[in-house]
Image (tube, rainbow over all chains, first blue to last red; front, side, top):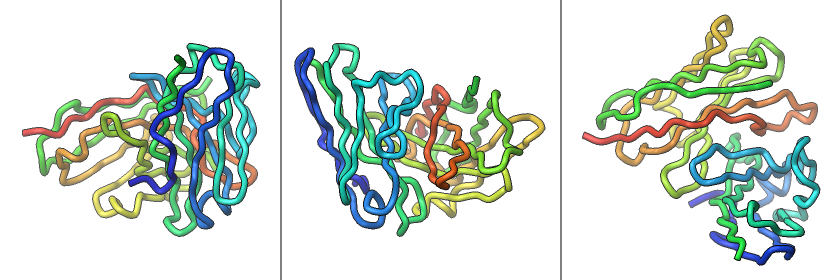
Length: 110
Length: 123
């Protein structure tokens, strides 16, 4: 059971906007930055969003992150077939004194 | 350009000790605030942080696995070694090493990852 809760799956059609949620608590999301990773099958995760809403260079601005209270969201606008991947949220947990991850959300582009 | 690569056995027997090596380039583990982490992912499951080691030798370990984990670094060889004792089939996973950058906010995240190595625990 992951410390952060994500829906196991999400889907959308090309061009649509989809959001993936990540729910935590005061000891993790509520008090720390949230990070998002994108992972294609058989490959390593890739940093997609850092400090809640910042994009590393090379990440399209179709990807955006936000945080409110003890929850965070990743939004993907103008959905493309190549966005089909697993998405993981992560943050620091003050009670555990360690990084924690969500269970991951498999995004399907219909 | 930062790169990391994991190496080690692909198959270990239950109760054995696993030793994995992360060989990296493009950064130095003598740089303040920089670290290397180990993260694993059982097939079809979530990512799980295991441990990381900083440039100043400080280490952090997953509390649920702390007694089984050791992380060491060889700065001159640009390597970090993870040792995990008493392996169990439940430890079957892809093991990744990742770069923890210096962050002005003191946050811990991982901006570059190795390709991962699948370790199977079976007799």
